[in-house]
Length: 495
Picture 1: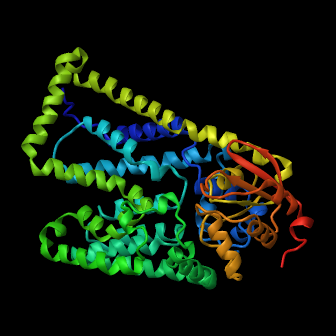
Picture 2: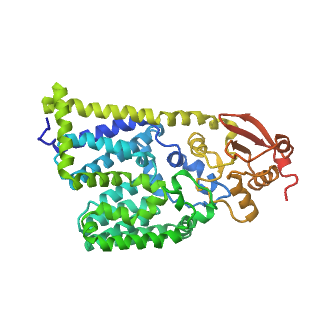
Picture 3: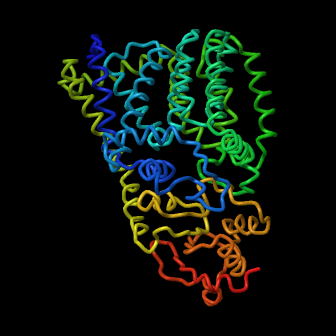
């Protein structure tokens, strides 16, 4: 039943392009966070101006860490409209992800899957593509890593790849540094020199572009754990709670020591297996933050398949042949290999596309539900939320004139007044804050609206007190209590 004749490269590309298109269209809205923010900024730069304006009283300034990503989106907006831009980005991302997964399967799993490989690729992409469908520049980091680990010991390919990738993501050095360590351990010196010099050039580009803005942003990232003061966002949480409250400055030497020991003890294994070596070197990242775990998921799945197929090859390949035999026995059309794949491949594509549509349809509903932020009463207003919520991103997508507190980096609140910063942090924890403290915070940031989400299980707020302070409840809208601020009353007794 196996189609021994491989498809020509042109047909191979067409299949991957078609599948990425179908998956992207079926999924539609696949992000409710930063991706919407990037789309909004790229389309409304003159209105939003800078992140420091969008997120007042934050550590964001006029510097835009994602400037080149926004320029790329703006270029695409010349050819595609705003409502379909995310579909185009997802299509491009999925195509390259599928193409790279195909190369990895051929390199690490020594078996001629023939046309069956498409079904395997589509299933892996379905399971691991979440982080690659978020319209965030970090998706380029994942594709860069996967491409770099496949390159041979040559200077020019990795040099050019790094030069192309680096300017799109201000934390490029996290990934280029990891690749450099892999090359160094595997003694790929030409490739190591290539990634090293390219990283230097990209670093100089960021420093020359805006030295103060770039260095301050990187510094804030390095002390982000301290700035958050115990606050967490979902993608920043550790896989295991034991690591949640331990400083990275403590974890780093521990992870590096363990990794160094394992590389020394099993050097021959890691010398030959780039995926295993990379996952070991970056273990401090993907074990301690979900965002990296999701980004590296395609490599993790491929590595697990590599282990499965190579520990007991006879058993693994026997199971594949057994599956093919069953298919051939119970489906008459499968006896003709070409006919089988003409049916099986499209069937797999459209079934996975349907499940993606089902998976992400709630995202579309959530985005539509947030259209109430486009109401003119919110135009050019500053809104305080009692927690970081995806409403920030959905609202900016619908109404780019808005200003929000907290910012997308939850701990990056103005630290000029330690007392106000303390109120800001406690507002987002279980106990919440008092009416007087809420009044102080609202007055400090000069908010026009306050939106309260029912999250703080131990907080008690008295509506009569809030009204007295000028924090006037207006309506309850889908789990949000929206307060309008009477600024005269709020500022009346503020000290």
